[in-house]
Image (tube, rainbow, N blue to C red; front, side, top):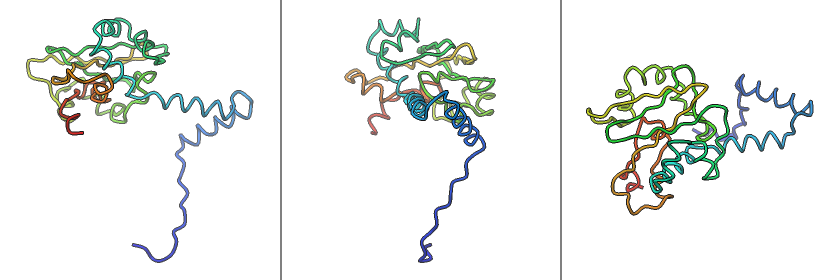
Length: 207
């Protein structure tokens, strides 16, 4: 409730990690290694990497069988075809969902993730609970995201490492034959790219 007095601005407390990063930035700028503008450009470049990039790859694969083959055989090269920059020392592999197999991605050791394409991983992906349970009880984990494959569908769990990062190529939903690439990409969520969920035509219809 208002007491009739203007409220003073309360300064936000900076986390130890943020303070450490800021100190490193100040040191790099102070020693002339980088400029403030260069640091800002790099931040903006990193923030431009989002799951929307993965959605573009999926939508193109759904509409272009030849591109799909290239994505599955050389995901980095396929990403470059769409103007994306997948540059990273780790391999980047797309694994295809099929009627008989559903793929799930996890990093059991830490939080390895295809950041070069999809950006930063969600907090739940980095949590100890997800990292441990995705291997032991993947169906239970997916159920908590509102999805579970049929009993006759095999669940394949791929463990990302420092050497290789994975992205799921989900199956195209039914009743999407008339959609263009942009509309199809809108169906593909980050969760579908990790494999805890799947694209749904109903979600698009609801919007």
